[in-house]
Length: 225
Image 1: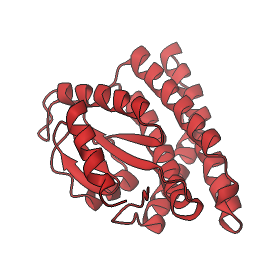
Image 2: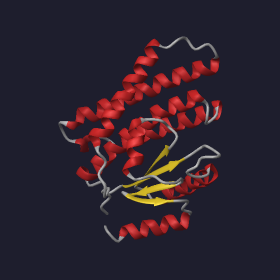
Image 3: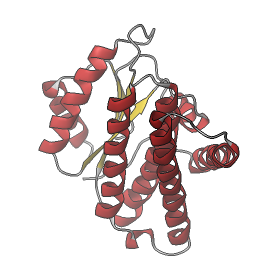
Image 4: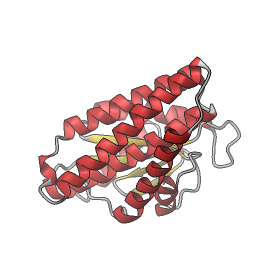
């Protein structure tokens, strides 16, 4: 099965945005004032780890750029993303999804997701992986003009079940309210109009899709393989 995205992601555009944002975080981390409360200290330590993860992932991509990207371990790459996602979920649980410091941390995690996405897409194209890439845009805001958070929660559960059922399906979830140029470019790429919003192998699917609808989307896309 071919898993090529119809509209290719502009790597230069996203990598530039990732690099600029990472530099901003590094500068802010190095020159920031001491964080007094235990809650913020936990956040600071977590942010440092996330920043190092982003830098390591970026360097990994650069090291294989001049050689064979197929030498990268997909399992290792994905496990790193999952591990960081678990840490992000734990931080949201402890501090709250709309905590300003959590949102700042999530901005770093968003960069890591986009970097992982770019590497996976390139591996898909060059290494005959045939993985299905699903982008999931959501909101945590109760009164978001683009859609309700509850449907987004339900969409997340449906995608989790769908992903477990179909191996080789990789889901990347993005909070639309994260203010980051790389994510902004990704949203513009697909003309995001409402949430939940899915992109299945490059094709946009706005609105909530239950498990049955996801199966129909999968079958429809198999016709082109």
